Image (cartoon, rainbow, N blue to C red; front, side, top):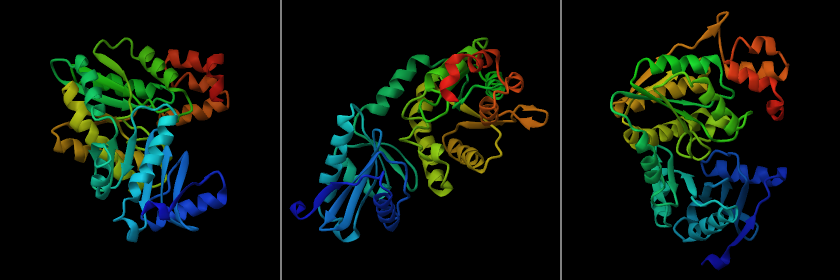
Length: 333
């Protein structure tokens, strides 16, 4: 049956091809997202199916309604899987709709987390379990809390959030988002966090992972262009946190800063709803302000682009300031 159809690479760098892919996705109730490549399944010149990849994530997979009973998905996913493997990735993720769960589990993918309209699977049967196991040595007796931060770069606002949270628990676990889609590199962001909180003995800093606000679990965190899609990804991200990460570290509290941006406000609201179902308290801490203006990493980046280090010095810890004025930060200009 598959011999009647042809798989073709669709170079999305070409505007005409990109428009065709996006139109196909919209027709199949999928939101166009950032992709490295897209493979189309053609019946002659008619696009009847397709799927894309972004790093080690398979997504935007769709087959025309009348062809979904055929075993076309298997060949399509095998092709996408091979493309990702050729890039050197070990674990492969699938971001799709819950209705396709059985399709992908039959292809040796395993569920990591889910929401009402989104599901994340991985090819490594023990991936999420191994990650949770790697966290358990850091589990402590007493009340443990968590903060998830990007810190692009680390500011006095981040420091204030962590300091206040650390006063409310015996141990605080700080996860630094590892996805390198920010102005400042992950290694630099992680180092600045560790330097900035070195005076807090009950704070443990962890490298983020593909299971915490990554391009796999939460692509709209970086896109911020579709709140409806993002809400489901927020739920999925929190589902993974509540079912795997929090139990591994005995986390019963999660702290967030107050927000004004609609995207992050929505995330905080959903967080309170989801965490409560898992008996995890969500505590919102009022953001630190300077001259009645909340201190934000985005403002620091604006000042950095203008070389306004005099103002920056009021907004960041000394270690962050020293980095920003050095040549080591020149790549971010």
